[in-house]
Length: 640
Image 1 (cartoon, helix red, strand yellow):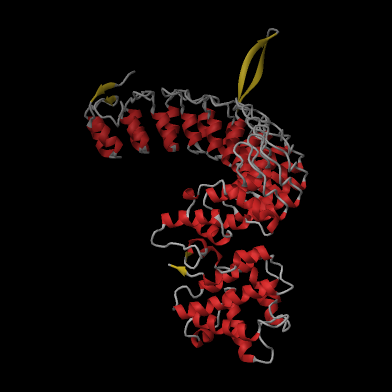
Image 2 (tube, one colour):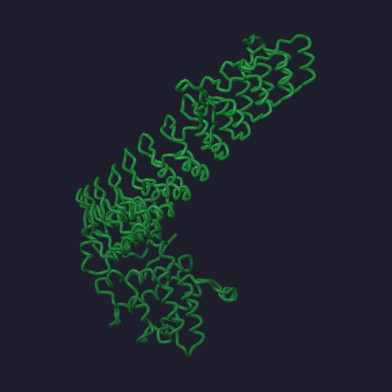
């Protein structure tokens, strides 16, 4: 029996809205119980029975069925009343429709059945109803190949997965040797069926983190090493998404921990390392996963991948298990150290260096080293660590002869340039030779200002100053260095390295700048060094001072007058590296940059005295040439 296609009727409206009495009256007056809507897009050929089933109106469904409603009528998309009721979780209506012989395996135009609808939406009571009536447990959606089991696994419906795996046992009679015998046939979900993308229910559950469902599937014999077309396994999928418990269950069932994707050779260990799943990496390493396996596409190892993504704990785990820290990518010779240097992962770089990574290894493609890479990206802390490990400051890229210093300057990383400037005279000429290849007009203000301060008098410094002045006509640097923009100096405001100096100054009278017998001087000097080391004042101390600048100048005067000529008074200053001493002088100047000329002059006197002592004192470690570079800088005045 087929439904008649007409417009929306009063019966359809009453059935949709649950108006039981109205439905009864309309049926009594001969309303067409099987009429199907044809002029309402949302109804899509629905009958009154479908509309009542959709909205859960059980009594109306019973009324319509009693009046001969066609139970298997289909909408234009193939949907039936049973599918609609199953999709919406109306258990009693499903039972009534099944009792009226609704087709349990009818398919929508895309292959979906009532069982698939119920399983996908987690309707636990409806699934067994349908299975008991012979629903095809392995029916699949046409477009994706998804079965009821896959969709239930995807959405975490554990009870339904168990129901589908248990299946139903049918009695079958057959003739065998002339005698009637009873055969048992169990219909259960195919646990290893694959969707059109190659994913099985186990892969789907692993992807979505449904641990209990994974356990159920494995208990029913799911293939733990089944592969999607690209070679992807459930273990790789779980590792991607960080599902540690599922990884453990898969490994316990014999998952191949060294299986690799066909396209690129990526393994579960590489995937976990990339995504920062430390516990999963540990579990895979406990299974002796190959930590030196290389990705096909470029030869990257798990260690390189961890270094690229900044996962320090994972890098440490891999190194502890013996990962090759000097392994190089076959495509370009890049090592884990270079990768860490490129991405600014200081802790990983330090870790690799501590394990003995080759600090001067070079890329096969262009000869770049980790130092060049870190310098070019402005990763100053990594540059410092590489230099401490004797990275070759003079190494040059084979393609164009560029060095780390050139990269840092070209890319505008002034702080990195400072870290790379030599601390001994032997390398200063080489540094100047390198810098002579630069085009000053292409450098930013910060680098230009820094080089104008750092370089000795000469043609190179003059060209630097000229370029700066051309870019900044309102803030020129004159040739004597008496007026310089503060752009290259702001980075030195925090003197962390001086904290230990300050501590020893306070606790050891022999190293202090103040006189132990002069409490006033000690108090002023202590507060002066609190300023230099960015230590916090007590509120009452702040109230005593008219301004920070006045305190600095007061303390500076005491230092000059009382401590400068003493043999041991300035030992802490003399022991500073040239770079830290330079920072100290800038700090003093920075403190008065917005004050009066008189105050600035007093601060400059202090700087000049400190520099003169550093040059003259026999214990000073700064060379005459380096002192010459600093000479005359007492007159630096930072302008806003």
